[in-house]
Length: 164
Image 1 (cartoon, rainbow, N blue to C red):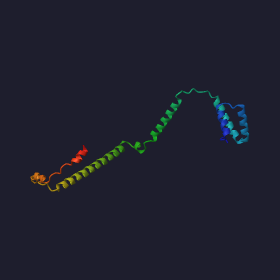
Image 2: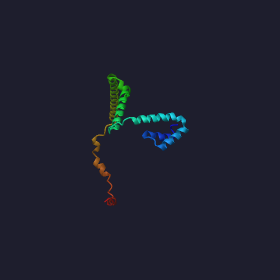
Image 3: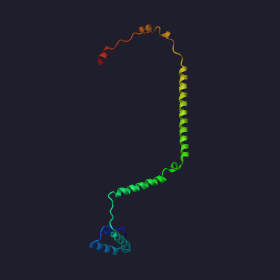
Image 4: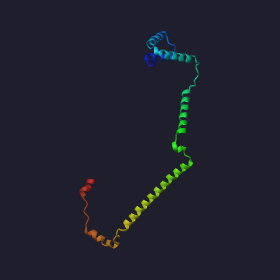
């Protein structure tokens, strides 16, 4: 019943100030139609009256920032207490063991890669060694005579003119 829009509006007005005569009449009419809500309303009215009697407290102008900082500090402390999981709870010896294991695996992988590269290099040297040797330079003795027997084609003058 307290979720009724009329009740909700009147409750918010009561929190801010005393209800005026028209609002009091509206409240009485609403309470007559909703007698089950009378007890809740009286509790709300008593709470509002008690809060009204409290003295106003001076709040520093950076109050919101301080509250948000405190909330962040508490959240960070909670993360530190529960965060990190297993790794944070382990001592230095298991951490060192894990680091040594990772380093060992890395060194083994590096050694394997080097041996594969050496094997490839050896195979390429063998492949080159199997190629028969080049002919002797004596074969080039008659190079000028062979070249002279095949005259080079004359340059294409039209093509050269187009390129200019």
